[in-house]
Image 1 (cartoon, rainbow, N blue to C red):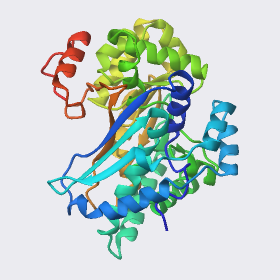
Image 2: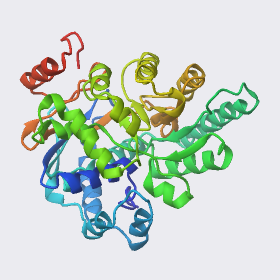
Image 3: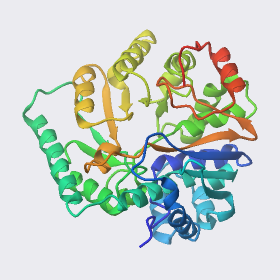
Image 4: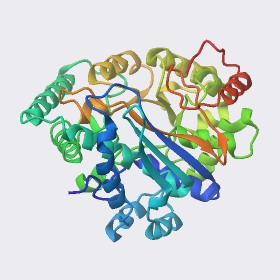
Length: 399
């Protein structure tokens, strides 16, 4: 059975960014590259034939009528975008897989951004599931179920705990690094059945459709980074990206990502205009407590009541970290927690730290200078130095 059963088997923010780029910059060309950031139990190059076979299948898929109808009933999805998806099919010529000399995988996608940006989540899910198939043991799922029930028991203790100003709200953000599609379905359906008071939805559009729960997501770094090459002054790329998002969604999908060039530089651009138009901010790198305090202070400085805004945390969370953040910030601001790998791949194996990042757009390098060292995938040192200079980011903040 193919790993990717449907083109809906991806994160919601792929569709929301896809629509925005189709409407605003449909001519953009982009390059994406795969990387694995940790040691593996065996060389990923051993998976190359299976990866290629799965990509062949992926590129044969089309959106089904009921899938298009589901997307069309989301109020922020426009009818012309649904018409585009009705015709859409991944092109195999736009993605290439090779073995590296070190025994790893080189996966690169090149082409029109609106035709290659969708590969990311599908390819990561394919690599993950193929990798863990070889490691799975007869008792693997039993261990996963034991750990899942422990998380649910931990959530259920909140019912008898102190009531804070804002509730604890948890979502599944684990599609890209899941153990398998079947396991993600079991996790999300179990949380929906047994912890509905705290479990609020999933980034997976397919699971949201199948289980009748909310699909969640707004934007990722690739959307912000694209604007580094779209003809606006580099210093203004964040403001341009945020403005286009506001005009595209008119109040929907109002969580802004803050760490493309670091929180300090983001807040310098996130003035009263944007702070009123966006519902809140998403944390994806750096110290989450320091970040949250900065965000709340920024809202207060702008004379905005933090209780009317939301902070979403999604950087390498587990339930203990999420609950600690909730206890710290819930008296002051609305909160959401997107947990990924720790929900969908907590079965006793070391997870793969795999990513696919946009490295060039319209022939130019693009990069992020996040609040966590080691997250940049830009190899153009001159461009990184220029980006630092423009946003006054000291060299000590290493990628």
